Image (cartoon, rainbow over all chains, first blue to last red; front, side):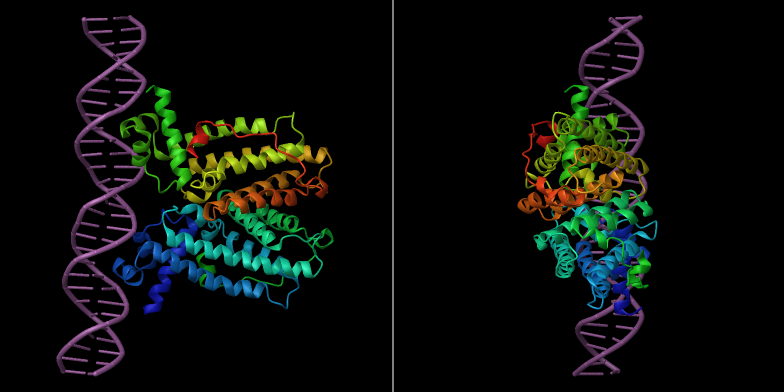
Amino acid sequence: MSVNETREKLLETALALIWQSNYSVVGVNEICKQAGVTKGAFYHHFESKANLFCEATAYYWQVVKQDLDAIFSPVNSPLEQLENLIQFLFKSKLSDERVRGCPFFNAGAQIGTDDEQVIEALQHLSQMAITYNLALIKALDAGDYLERSGDMQQQARLMYHYIHGVMSYAYVQPDVDTIRKDLPEGLYRLLGVKQAYWFTVSPTWEAEPSALKQMA
Amino acid sequence: MSVNETREKLLETALALIWQSNYSVVGVNEICKQAGVTKGAFYHHFESKANLFCEATAYYWQVVKQDLDAIFSPVNSPLEQLENLIQFLFKSKLSDERVRGCPFFNAGAQIGTDDEQVIEALQHLSQMAITYNLALIKALDAGDYLERSGDMQQQARLMYHYIHGVMSYAYVQPDVDTIRKDLPEGLYRLLGVKQAYWFTVSPTWEAEPSALKQMA
DNA sequence: TGACGATCATACCGATCGGTATGTATCCTA
DNA sequence: TAGGATACATACCGATCGGTATGATCGTCA
């Protein structure tokens, strides 16, 4: 196994395990065991468990960013972008029944406030997500798809709040059909998309298998 | 210390500690230490840590229910009820900077999926919350405060999702002013309250100190 | 008064936690 | 080909985890 292979195997295993339960519960031993490496290897690549989590956050974002850039590609209309986002959230996190919620949507709630670097990593991640939301809202507004204009930065946050909430709900109540309905309904309502445009667009984005997808 | 005193002290201490960090991180030893009782007393009153959590959930709900019943009192108009709810969510969970989010909003994300009785306790709690939301939505709809009628059961869920999301956001980003703005804005939008009624009502509910409030 | 159950207090359990010390095999470079 | 850095593997550390066994103290009621 090459250097990067070991490192990435650890990152992906950690993400998968945290994904399935939570940061506090998943131990370094278990991560190593599942990844098929020893503790010596773990602490060779990462200085601590918290550091691993931060690196995993960055790794996760790096992968997700590619999806997001495809979803929000300028070749898609704003409405298509929104539908793609819904598709993405649904497919990547809810299709497999064993996986509920998103480790980073949830992570804020999983981690004690004492670990500063972890908090910062999560804040950065949420800020990134909100930035993407903001771009979408600006596009929707420019395309006259919205009933009213408002504080778009705020609307981007509202979007984030809501998506976060739905994902967390899915963690406790993995009722796929319900989530499938609530996700678009809430977003259309929150953003104030003109009702004529509701449920009128088919997504142009399709989930592709990737390292992170396989984890789910 | 009487029997009920010890038991309630343990429940309240557990809630406070879990509130501040999370279920996995807070140990039985720490709960006992903070509560000023010994482990013997703990395991005399509760058969396990998970059982304590379930009991604490019920205890918490029992206290919160009183607030909710006051908030949704029929003497208040639906708009006042909504404003009261916002006030309640904000005051009870965000006023103290050290406390971020809600232990039970977050708990779904904090607990491994392996503990069945804990999951059930949380599902029950969320169902209760959604039931209250539903009553509010029906009242708003009946009072012609909403722009459109829809699946009210779903709308009650959407409300829950959003509130959950805002609370979790507050956990990582304890920016009180932002939350203060986002909470009503999102709820008005989600529920589709006619814009003429936005921010027009003053709350009739005021937080009163209680055992659980002091925890915060 | 004496027996008994309720309410704890103390001491301890094996397991596991995150982390480390040290040894070793491999590889690149000089 | 010597030597040092890299990439691990193994064994172990003290601390803490949830939980238990046992005994002391108390009020209660026969």
